[in-house]
Image 1 (cartoon, rainbow, N blue to C red):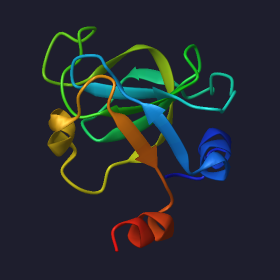
Image 2 (image 1 turned 60 degrees about the vertical axis):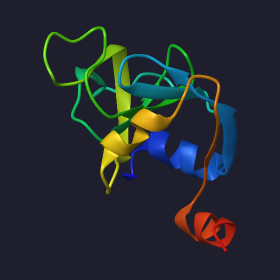
Image 3 (image 1 turned 90 degrees about the horizontal axis):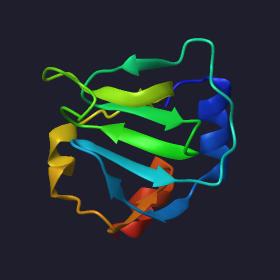
Image 4 (image 1 turned 90 degrees about the vertical axis):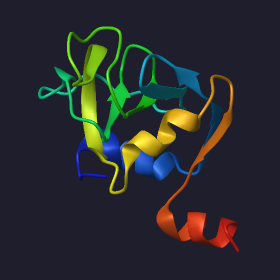
Length: 115
């Protein structure tokens, strides 16, 4: 996660548990964060980008092409605020199904869950 105002809001809201929605190779989750569109918000992103979609109040994870794009690079439906990036292989998220329960937590919280 970066240090943007939106990323800070999301970080402070963690942990978040929500049901996944799938749109092409993007997972998005409605979260309890209400942030406006950042001046540097954009639609064209990279695989592994973490974003916040102000229109849907959603946390987004891009791991491949989306229906809005024309190539292999993901494209958001409308501008998203960039929050950071996945530090591992984001394509592993292809196994997540629509409606699956997803938990987003700070790394120290996630470590305690795996024990």
